[in-house]
Length: 603
Image 1 (cartoon, rainbow, N blue to C red):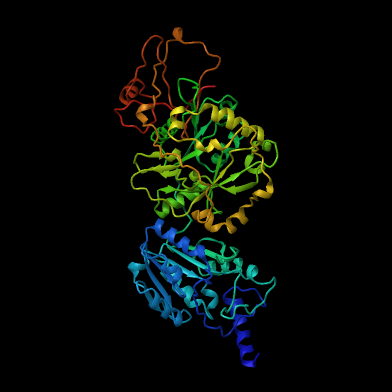
Image 2 (image 1 turned 180 degrees about the vertical axis):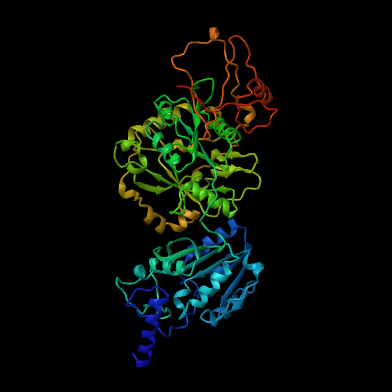
């Protein structure tokens, strides 16, 4: 190595340590080679394949018209996004000549990213997803690129920045220069994260993605950078209400509800006449201010069939009765998780609200028992650790959180798709941790007694519940851990960054999709009548009086019983207020409609 080049490398080393957060002792390359992104038919390796797929998904969900690729190389991956998006590529030299020749429909801008300022009209940036895939490692001084990106993120909704992870793509303890002669320096995940936060980028997520489509190895860092105007601080206090449906879930219902209450999420339970102690367990929450209440549905008593459509219609009816800013349609065997590890679910929903979206989709991972035992201490989340991504068709559309916009909501597609006018789904999916089977005994009882033996014939004829058809007596529900993956939150969030946020590259199990069934209209669901109190002489003796659960503000809901031998008397709001002027009746229904009580639990 010549003396002058050695001096240049030493100066770059000091700069890297002080300005770019590279570890001490690392040697950068002073004069990198020009990287010509060549394409040869039949031997082309696609680098960062999921970066461009994610750009496409985010572009659709943010409602963008443009994809701007900074350092576009030969332009092939960018050109595949046309005509869905208008494309803008930025590069220089032979790469840009190739783009102009092969893809004349694109806009190709020449800039030296080491020195030049990038000039793009504001009206394009405000409607564009930015991509900067494996570029920063080629630059002698990436400060110019970072300043350009920071300015552009005043307008753009999202930027995808990727670069090879030095610790994963090179031998352990590598101190440079990079093996690739076109690279100046390479970062690891922690160093790049520190660099971006130091430059005050609004980093939404950072993790790993595949470096190429050939070996599918997760050796490339991917950072998703959000708009500068967004922040996760000082979020507004919002009321989130989770509406749970439950049937024979005594082994997990306590932990499922308690986890929601700990996040200050309000809970209301529709209990479908369980034959175990599920209903009795609910009474333990009666003093919790975030537990709104519970009802047994249908009101007439147990029915021979499990009618999921009527339960879904009841969920939507409850969401129109209980006031909240956001609602969650929640199954008892689910646990929701925020895509932002530093935020719980309620805080994450408030952040989505700030972003301007009013519905949230989910990625599903399913946990399975690896031994024939029930979860310890009623905490299935701590006991069941081995998972796989959901493979059923229904797992890939789970829009089950929505904002109270005043529009009627329909829980279509078996309850997996909350649809309403003006819906805007958040670009980033939340996580649903699903625990359908907790042991061999519990799974057999659930599938063959609680489900398959009780399915409503009309729903089966309509194509619902077909996912139970794959289970026959003798099926082994306990799984081998070698077939699954151990769930560790940080590793999962880092390794499966793209998959968990977008659903890209997740396998689907091919089977006949169920028909898209809208829930039964609310009018066909018999409402709970308001009943007048019986005279003392006419009251039926009961072992225990009704248990009155109060709403968060401590205001009780009153239920009136009908006299024996007479029809139930419906009272309007005005009538109730006039008869009981000192009792404030809480509701959110118009004055002319009868008030319905929903939060009375009978022991």
